[in-house]
Length: 239
Ligand SMILES: Cc1ncc(C[n+]2csc(CCOP(=O)(O)OP(=O)(O)O)c2C)c(N)n1
Ligand SMILES: [Mg+2]
Image (tube, rainbow, N blue to C red; front, side, top):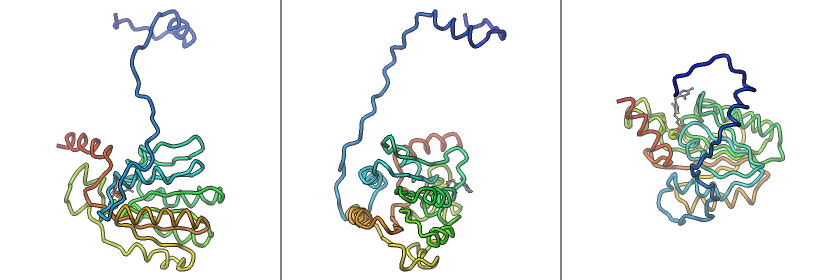
């Protein structure tokens, strides 16, 4: 048993053979459950990653195109429960940060009738930020959520929690749309708490014909649950 090797079996014969085996898989698989709506309290405390993604879950609509950048944004968005017509774009294997900002320029230009949401971190944004200017020139209306957590939080979870190579220069993010020529075209928002985030999400709903740029401040070491778990495993491996 388990030591027979035969390299001369055709796929058809293999499948026929498998069909003759009386095999039943009795494993139990977890059932998918839609998350409960409004499963959070609105407070004036600093917004946490956990609440951010729960509120994002309530905000997304069935036709949205969602792009999530490598970083805490991807690890949180990965657990969003999507509907059949949603589209989700990420690149966890290649993982080249800065990809999603120009990517949403493409997806939004391809179909201007669909709402496109970008979830991105401050570090990734800094790599390809100038494409916001092209978005303004093309008069497209994506919604850009920038997590400002003062550096490379995802990397801190893997190696060098407080190392200087995970720090970046703090920018005045809310000035960027004006710098890129969109002072009057882009609605800029500032979020520090869940109460503020709720207000901003309602404003976005109320103004669908405008590009929105939202700076969301969150803790340097705050991360979605999934990233904390993966980070611990990587950190162990790195020694
Ligand atoms: C081009 C490139 N440079 C560097 C990296 C390594 N890297 C992966 S994630 C990341 C930091 C992302 O930080 P940020 O966008 O601020 O996300 P956060 O985790 O802080 O939310 C870096 C530097 C990479 N994947 N690709
Ligand atoms: Mg960051």
